[in-house]
Image (cartoon, rainbow, N blue to C red; front, side, top):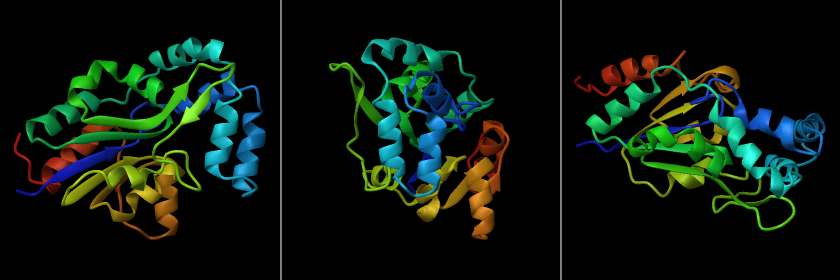
Length: 213
């Protein structure tokens, strides 16, 4: 039997909009646009930029941060894809560069169908939030390739939408990309499958992996 696994991004992938960016814009006391430009100009790393923004948020506002994501829409077909994975014993792993509590809060209704969720934890004991990540790298707060290495599998599918997913797709058997990730893969002339919602992914995986209904 072939051991298969799915690694999926959260912000802008499972959610229909970029919840993490929206949260930073609303709650961070530092300028999101300023930090973003410094990251793009390679003045600071993505890791340091995200840490700077998140750790400028007062701990007393953390409950508001968690509430912010609760109403964000989930892309259509997500639950049915999870059902397919459970039916065929395919682990579904969520890897986010955002906050673990936020991701778990929004996906609480699907908790029994998701194998695991990896993201940065938050310490709220001080006056400002403090980020803790066991998968940190020199460039990223959550190194997605580091997360994949704790799993054993023969084939993997990656679902993503952003630049933070670039390192994740390098060893994937099949990549489902949209938005910035798709643009990047186009420039590198790397193959990927386009998708609008999770119904497209379910249909594609059923055919690619010959999964019976």
